[in-house]
Length: 253
Image (cartoon, rainbow, N blue to C red):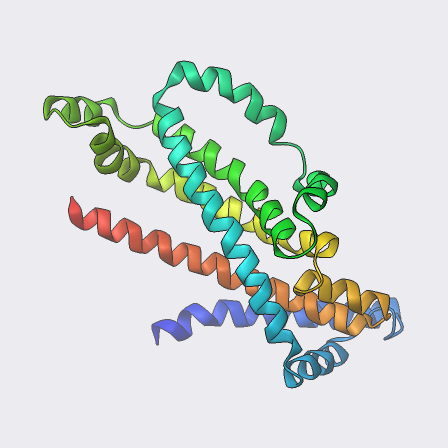
């Protein structure tokens, strides 16, 4: 029953979206070839599911996403934990981060394709860049806001710097870091699709470009629906991971 209650709002939301979609077509009088209705998109979706091509592209996209996202999260959290404790060093590094952060990962794509070629790596690098800065900044900010009482207790127990980071700073910082994980996930998922449009011959982004080139807009819309549903599933997955980590550290207390 609990699962049904959680899924009900999602189902209602999807139903509302379908109604708005169909209503927009009805009011605008758009041709099916230019703005495919839900039924046509459903047929296109069934086609690519039946021939097995969709799941192959999904697997490749998810591999690229997790490769870039997980590495970015690990590197950003480790750096953030250290830089958050070194105020003078962060004052030097922060301007560099603030200059690089607003630059779209896609802007780096000409260099990325030249350096890494065409294949998995360009998309993975773009995802890494998209996820790295939100996690780094949220981690540094979280570390700075750790209650000094905890740090004094760690000092009184003569904990090493590594133990202090692992047992005190990281658990206390995690709620704010989790916000960065959510932001990074959305950003990385968006740029995954964009990255696959630039330097890949497979994946969901490539599938959209391939369908566009053949003027199969129903297939383009089907891919967009799949991307949205997978993004929702990934966001829910991060939410459950956050709850799981909080339960572990909550129990440790």
